[in-house]
Image 1 (cartoon, one colour):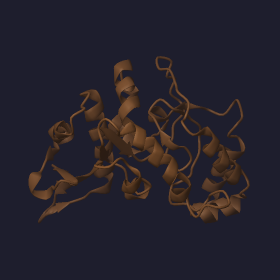
Image 2: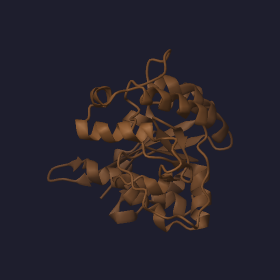
Image 3: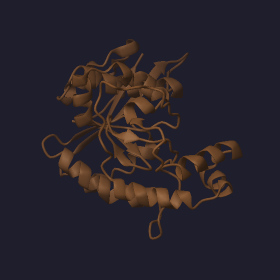
Length: 252
């Protein structure tokens, strides 16, 4: 069973993870291609293509210009990402055994790195999967990464062809089912809350719950997909009436 999770735009490189051994990202040559493209962009081009303000564009420009500097900060991805989902994951309190399990089962999809495992060392960057910033010959980052990620998951899913999808649509759609082993089951996870008249999705809470569910699987070393239905962090519970074989809904 493999988990897919989106990255975060917010990052924090202030942690000092002396107790963990970092690993290298899996596709350095492809990342290098993208860094080269990003370095060629001006601040104005970055602002326009990434749809961000000039101040943010300046920061992104500096990230890529300094990407290979020895002084550029580096951290394991699960500790560097600082978005809402990663507050839920809270890898900062993981034991060595937690990280060992997470390294084998948690896959963070990234526009720059393709797939990042929790202990893979990353540097400050910004490159959402939907941005059309790619080397010549590719239509999009989906096109750039599709075959590489297909080959990666073909190997990961041979023994247990199941994916728990807690990634956003933007990132999850780079995984094409036709590139996966025959019979692979992808289970999309939804998180809803009781509203005045019906169940509703609250984005900020759903994002945190994606990290919480990942944490639940990792902390409990779950390998059987049915065990995921036992997720009960922060009062969530599995709701069969709003679920089917391909979409599982948790409510609170």
